[in-house]
Image (cartoon, rainbow, N blue to C red; front, side, top):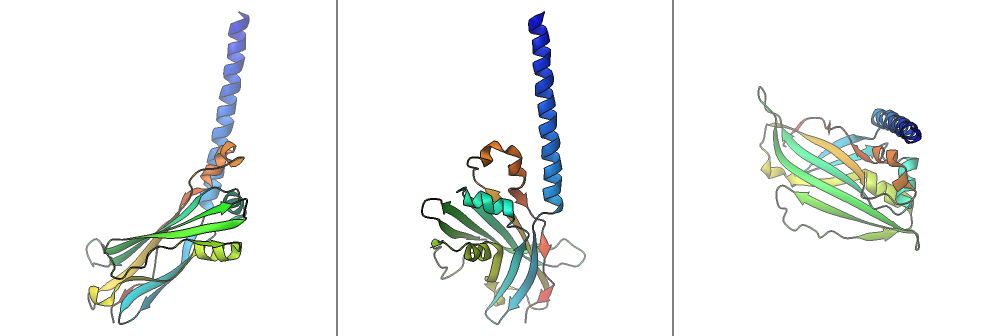
Length: 208
């Protein structure tokens, strides 16, 4: 009889803890979504040689995220870029896509940020530069690099049809590969650091 009563008490405690955790997770997740990061300041750069763009991730580097990076957790910002051709009366067509992964790992002993970039193109680019890893102790430099896409070349201008309308569509994934102590014990932190922004688009443009 005593064992049954004890088991019921334990079950009630476990159920209460589970419900409390679920509530906290949903509340924090909804808050993170409502005030989450987004892509802004998208501008198209056209020349006779190629089509390029600039954009900025806004609201992506919060105080909590800075603490996670500085804990030594490997962190990746992945940007998905599409060059889309508008087709009146039909679905728009993705003519070209590019994925840019920017990763950072903080060395807590040397107090240095090691960061690098990996780029994937749907169309192989000639004379593509090899990805190079860099090291800095300046967090402002790292922050600017993580959040800003500046004059990113997309495609040769001759490869888009004259007279057709195009736009650039961008979204971002913000992820921590693994959480270190004490963040690995604070499970709801994952809801802050596994975020995908909405797709944002540039103003439409045509080839020169």
